[in-house]
Length: 328
Image (tube, rainbow, N blue to C red; front, top):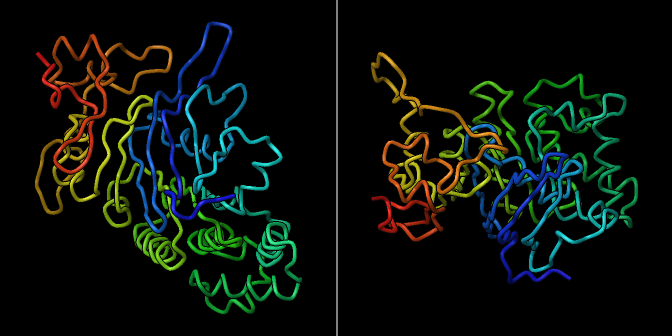
């Protein structure tokens, strides 16, 4: 059973591997994080950092032959990383909701949004009658800001705009009142004004329902507007975590500093955007020591020899030898 006194989500020393004929690729390496009820944790980093892979591992949706090699994942005190596929299927939707980048991949074009909502509700809450499920579907559409939900409940996905479809997907994620929502790039395909509406909606619903949210995104603006804390990933490793204001305004890790410096200031006149030299390493070519050391202007011999552990900074934690006296 679930323990309400525990963090909603706790990931400890998670390692995800993909074996192949040439050996084993480590996609996630010793990732640890937690999310409290009602909290939004933003997870950021370049493509290939491991953000979506972390979400997939939590959801039990790793593509074969990928698997969790070590570590553990607990949801409200109950370990879920060792559950059988059938048990995870029951958990998804009921205890863990998901919001993905393209709402059309989450919605069936052959069924009305009402039919899809009522099916989700009745599957995860079996004693719900069809009438009660339909009324809840209408209430969910109203809650996520769909105008005229009594009529729109019988419309098909193609009859909604992109922003409205994403609202429907959020309603689907909330249908069974899950403890945790994994939101993977939920606003990337939307224009700026709709992005603001969706992030505001997500934050309000999170607080109203006391639901924990893991928000995966590359957009620092979305993080700044939505998240309570932020975790920064690089090459499958967690390298910094802390309160969103602290990490965005005074980043500790050189990689996080580079990400923040790459964002142009509003109204500033610059000839060239800042960029981090180099690229994210491939899984079969992750350097020894700190994985970021080939791109880091502050790297020293120690950074190339030994991987730094996560240590306390002024308000969070960072995995960097700058805070452990070992750069030189």
